[in-house]
Image 1 (tube, helix red, strand yellow):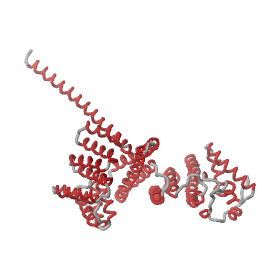
Image 2 (cartoon, helix red, strand yellow):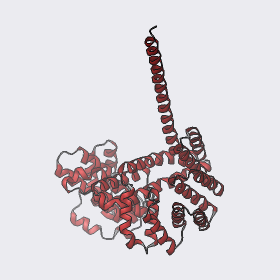
Image 3 (cartoon, helix red, strand yellow):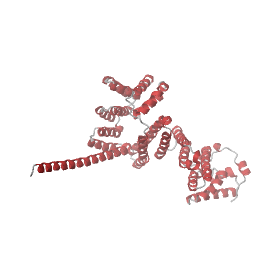
Image 4 (cartoon, one colour):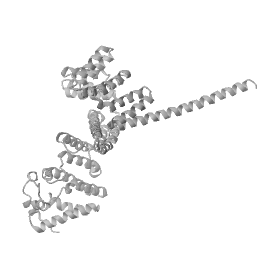
Length: 468
């Protein structure tokens, strides 16, 4: 096949890609934009397109790479496949390559391809069947970087660049929209965050805690969509969403629980140092309160200081709950109820009041006020029936703490039936309780066998001791 000269290429690609609109244009017209309208060059380009697709289907990565190079250089708008299939081609080339210099070369070209796609994105979207956002592109880039950067860069690899790619992608999707961030993406992002925390625990703990809350929250929001889909009768979508987000949510929670980052003594020390800097910033105060609430620091003096400062700046249900917990610790039960009621007043709807009741339930549970916690779980259902499943799960946890395993299992079953978003958590808790019950039954059986043996032994000793 003919190759165009560099001079011809530079002469033909004059207009900027960002300004070009290919809506309604044929593949021939898109090719002609870069190569010129000569029949032979268009035919040559179409041949490269066919071979690019065929070699990819055959997993002939080296030949696919040859065709890719021509298309990228001379017909960058021939099709989106150059940008969507190219990274996977480079991934396989890197994995198969034994020469470190070539690995690095393929890696650099892969990153250049992502940069080119970002540059050409507006033009590519004018003819793409599925439009992409910058966030979508950055998400794919983050995952591919994470897959191959370490083996490609060797000692130059920096885990923080992986983290930066994931964080930028998530930020861009949140700000500008795009396809949903998958559960696997969130799980991989949190694994990277976890690795950074383990490498630098003293300087990254607070960011790690925030990453945990954000990743967990994103999964829970997508599971809420599963519930809405189920209620609308779309069971296929509901099951797909649960399959996509429930397991990553469980993995994120397990990774976090094993990290040791939630050590309350260290968190208290961190937020004690930061109080002077944060005490006039309502957003940082509320964020810190949420982190401390979720990590068993809500009975500490510094937690109460943050609650008082936040409430003074702008009363919210979060800070009101904090002050209610302080009043409870001080034995001021009337004051406690006053602040809990204030938290409910600060809500703008019954839907929000239901959520606040669950938050109050959490606070009372951590303070071992189990009767009150159960009461507020029931109130949450009355305010907001959509929270029934979540409230039942809270009741299951409380009954587990009380050792009332039969009631806990019953609430697990009710939670799973009422709300698909908590079905995974409820089923896991139920399975764990049943394991505990099985162990207890086995221990009781062993204990009875031992007691029976000792009784027989004692009877035998009495018999022989009596001279019979």
